Each structure stands twice: as structure tokens, then as C-alpha cells.
Length: 432
Image (tube, rainbow, N blue to C red; front, side, top):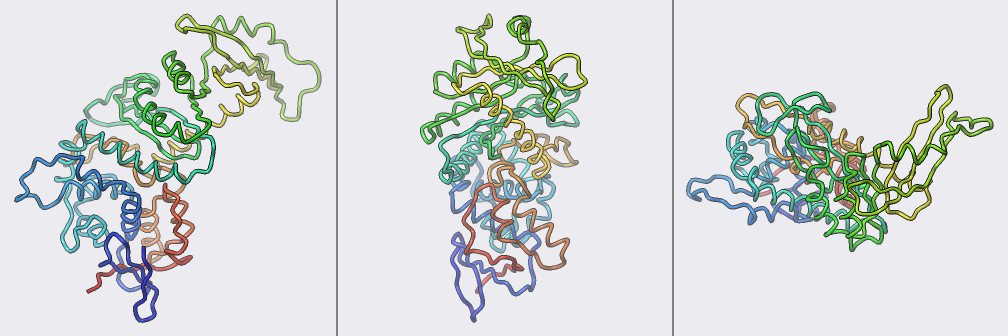
């Protein structure tokens, strides 16, 4: 954004459309000014613009009012702003901030029926999903360039997305005990979404893990000295170990107990003598060498044995790893993956990812999770546009957006210091 003066007043003109002028006089405003910030993020890092050429448009240009790129932006911006239901487009299409953000100027955006056809006929195809994945990758590139760390930790996990009705790929999942989708996610240890895949509800938790992991490794392995992978026992698969060893990726994966492992740790199950610590938990770590029948070699397994006050039997956990770290550090690294559960929950709450019910008149295809992760990244806090929307409805006619809130709620950590004062009412108007 470039700052410019008009009658000695502080104003902002976005680079993507200098015809837009934002000042701080508190007159007529739109309740969703965050749409403009989303477009500025999109424009600065060229996240969605390439989709204009990646998506094939077979429509007649004579009868087309909206370009594929404009509709893709409208759908992604709506989801990022908390309007996950396609029906919301019927009233948002005339919102002045959204119209300016998607490049419609004085014309209305697309309605629900048109966006639903976009999801079913364009974004739901193999080419459409690939275009969304590419957009997510471009968004991640902007984040990775700003990381000063020598180590990248990738957490993989799956979750349930309950669905209602006979939607495509909805199936009963015995583990969760409900009809659902079973999406797979990959996050960094900082909570940035690196990949997402919407899967049928009855697939195994690790189904399709290598196709989602391989592009991440290929793209970012050379940028970091250490590249670590963490996962629960569902991802304890020989093909995962072999892939990581071939790509120089260090893995920390929980291993389910079995008769052989229990026999190996049997000599260490005697409760330690002496007074227990104040925590009431006595811990013993054991380094093992173990090879399952389906493995091509022996691998290192770290066993953690815990004795708790008031419990007769110890709690035992196993971690398979190719790391050379001490056993205590291995356990500490693995325990850090518990935070990925919070990232998934935040993504569901902030972006309404858990919305498998189809409203009347909407398309019968659930939007892939890529769209909700492209701009806000499902991180701590609310999305920018949702924050402005909430502030405008709670605080009257003016939307007050704190500079620190903007910086912390954007998935991409933008240097927004000179752009906005610490707290200002934002008014959008068109200049002549």
C-alpha cells in the first residue's frame, strides 16, 4: 500500500487498485473491510492470480459476467471471512468491499448458484484441486521465506468432518462412530497449514500420506538443515519410514505396543525404589532395537515407562525414530506434536471447517479444505475479515482494527507497521 495525502488527511491507496482510497474519517463504511486486506495479501504474494490461467474456462465469453479468477477469489475470500456457506454470496455479492476486492468495481459479484457450479464443475475437478494446491503452496512460500529457523517440523494428522445427508464420499467411520469425511492435514510446528486433503470417511488415517508429504519435502527440504516429521501410531507404516530415510527426513512416530515390544521391556518394568518426585510420576526411558515382520531392517525404538501414584501398573509408550538424539530429547520432540490437535480445532472453529451439512439450495459437494487454508492458514486467532465483521457489529458503525491484531491474525506474517495506525476506523470510498 502507498500512503498519500488529501487535504492533510491520512489516507491509504492499495497497490492492486489505486482507485480505492481508505481514509479514517468514520463516515459510511462496509462491515467487512477485511476483504480489502485479504486482497492486498493475495496481490503482494501472487497467491490466487495464477489460477486465472490454471483453470480452463469453457464458457462463452459473450455470456460470461464473471471471470474464473474473480469467482475463485470471491469464494476463497468469503470462506476466509467466515462466510463458508455458499448461500451467503447472494447478499455479499453487493457488498462494496467485496466487489472492490475481487475487481468488480460497481458491478455485483457472483451469486450462490454460480459459485456452486464453480465448485462442482471447476474446483471439484482434478485440475481445480491442483490449482488450489498450487495457491496454498504459493502462500506457504511467503511464510517459509520469512522463517529464520534451521529446522522445519511437519506434523501430520487426520480428523473427522461430520456430514449430514448423502454427500459424495461420506461414509461411516468406526473409530469416530459417525458419518463423516476423513480429511488429512499437514502443519508446521508453528501452526501453518502446509497441505490438506479431503478424503472419504472410511479410509485409514494414513491413507494418501506420501502424496501429500512428498511435494512438501521436495519443495522445502533444501531450505532447512533439519527436516523433522511427527505423527501418531496411525502413521507407523513401513513405507513412511523408508520414504523418510531416503529423503533425509528425521521421523518421530508413535508405535503401538505388541507382544514383542512388551517382551523387550519386561526387564525394565520394576518400579524404581525411593521416594517419587513431587509430580508423583516416576519415568524410565529405554532405548531398543526392533524389527517388525513388515520392516526391511531394524530400527530404533524409544520406550517411555511411567509409574503414577495410586496406579498399580505402569503406562508405556513407544516411539520409532531414525534420530540420533538422546532418548529424553526424542520423547520431548514427539510430545510437541500434541499442539497439532489445537491447530485443527482452531481451523474448524475459525473457518467453520466442520460444516458438512448442506443448506437448502446449495451444491451437494463439500468445498475442499484447501480453500479455507490458502489465506488465513488456520492459525491462532480470527481471520482479518471476520475480525472486522465482528468489531463492526459489536462496536457500532465503525470497524476498529488493531495493527497488532491484523499482523497476528494473518497466516502470512506481514510487516504491516507503516500501513495502519494502532487503532483506526476504516472507511472505504471510491475516488473520482
